[in-house]
Image (cartoon, rainbow, N blue to C red; front, side, top):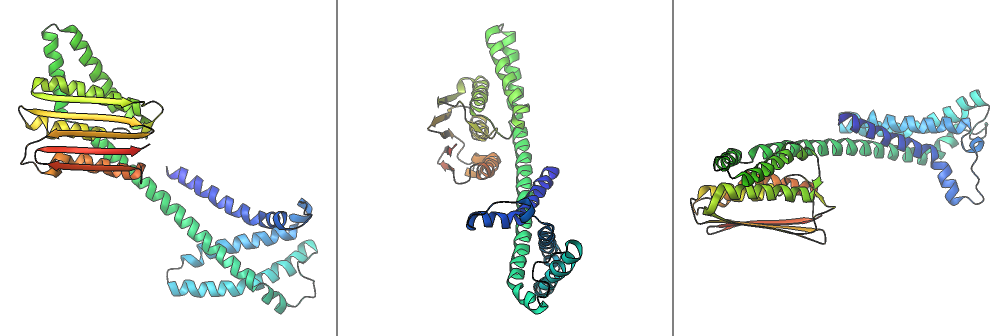
Length: 344
């Protein structure tokens, strides 16, 4: 990841330098009448030397002067740099260029005072370029590092979420499979083994991707609910519906799982009977809606009914769907309900 950021930063700086070297040609092509590009004219050695001066001076301002610790020292450095550029251009364009190539930008007899005053505005432009370059570089680094840290944090939270899928679910499911085998109910045993296998494969392997197909997430939830239905037996009334076209849509993995898993953990698992869970998923015009409701023991707080999984999933929603989701989780009496809507 760090190497990728460094390469992107290098490309950004290369683009900045390219813009400086091509600025004159682009400006002439847009505004000059009857302009025709010519390598010999537009990139004659004297101009290349001037471009190198501008690039070097811009980077000197951005990464030397603007990196000085004291604000007052930086301010003084900017003033000195502003006054120093015209003499440097005089040295490069009138002395070094004449010595190397036999040509000068201004007439050879032009006075230093005229060239100094003539370049004060251009010196101001170079100062602005240095400030812009510093801002661009700092923004890029901080933005990319922040984004990387956010993704790493979400990755850790996703790993934590995967580990938080109720471990009793796995053991109880295996016990149920064992009981059906003992009862010689081969069809039910095969069905449960297939669903458990698909669920574990999804949780262990496919969740490593940043995005997964929505229909795979729905299939995983279906397997999970059906396995829980067998575990809970007749003491829990479970309704699960998924309607709409889920093909060709993607979401971050295990985004919907906490809502369903919490319904069983804080609802059915805490009550011996008269428990119910309703789960409805719909998709229409790229708008995904999930409604999960369940009853729970009244002395459990709303926070406990929601669980830490909903806190983590909220962070993921903010990251992946900023301004494109709504989430309402409420505890009313002995009923907890979560409504999630996402524009995909």
